[in-house]
Image (cartoon, rainbow, N blue to C red; front, side, top):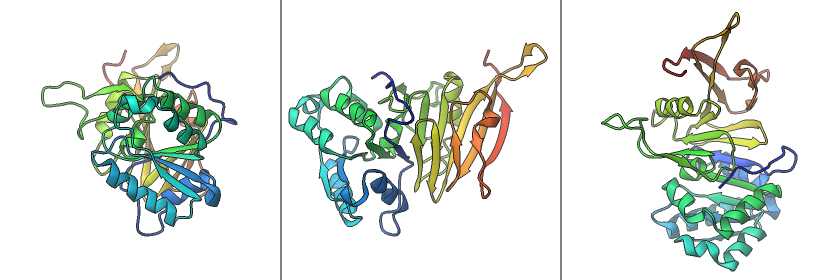
Length: 284
């Protein structure tokens, strides 16, 4: 799937949830997705494509969105690539105002949707301004470059873990989830270092990075870690690339895609953002 020709005014919000979101308390993250999808008028389509138990995952979110006040919630279980070609499945996507991917294995989402009518319908929904979100694997699949497997960036033999194309609803962005809880900073830094023109978003559990165009705001109990690379100048000479790590907490807003990473963050008065940087040797 290729990145969409998205304008900030036209495209719908993308909600990347880090997993393990609150489902029994205030449900802040899920309520926000429902609001973005139309509130009491929302028609939610749940896609448990990543789950090993799609019936269980589908029923859970169907019940949750119903309790939160959605006008309707429907589950669409795409078991294989062929299911994503069925006209009734395309109609389900077209009728929804919000599309939500559950957790599991993000590679299953991409494999079942790539080059299918349902995959194209989801992209069309995004371009039409509808809300699309996902939790855990569902968040990772929104990426342009998608990472999967394990808690570390390298396996025991020093080989890089799986990286491949995601749904590319977030062009130029790599999303990682369960971020602080599973100590995934190293693997996100590794991924961004291999794609230095990309931005990495590491999303904690019970937290969402909500993206509209290039603007991002954070909701939930954890934080979002922004990882970028830059090649600073010294006089007329370019120096070794650096990685910039910035951390945003609930209520913070920032803008991705600025030339200077120091300008990425718009700091509200109560900002919880912290930043640091370090040399990245070997990136030439």
